[in-house]
Image 1: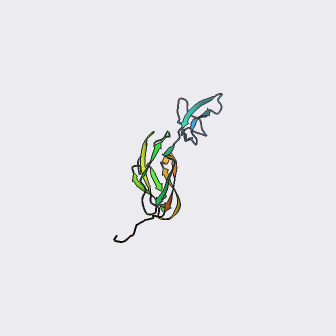
Image 2: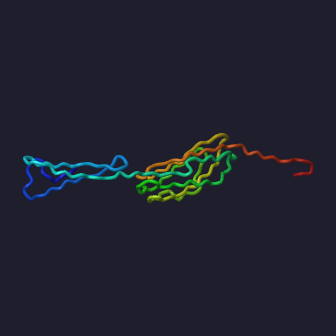
Image 3: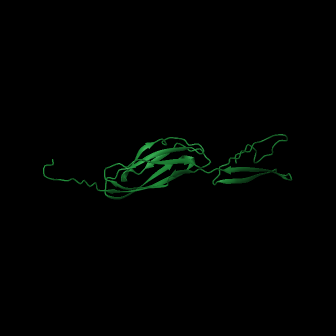
Length: 173
């Protein structure tokens, strides 16, 4: 607690000094503190009660999980929309979205990148799945909103072989 009050000498009669208190909550909810001021050689203590409330940040991604199912290798799925919403009590910083593209998941559209979401604010990203390999694929969407927090959604799908059936016969070309 910074102070302009003298620590080793006396404050002159009718003089003033200043005590500055800063509130930096480490948890959500109501907080209370007390500053007690005593004067050397004097009886009694002046007490100041300080009140504050820690706010919470929260982002949610909906849906929190999406399974793209079986998708032909090398063929993009239809895009799926994911909504990012600020459900906390703090305005977000610029939204950063990271998508695990190594497994074939790709951003098809994004109106979240760099957006600042107020309380209840929303933005969406569209994701497609284009498997490059056969078998299961797992990925994630990770969202960082600074003071508003982080959130994620899980992605899944499976690459399958494209099978082409053709009929051959006499006289066909």
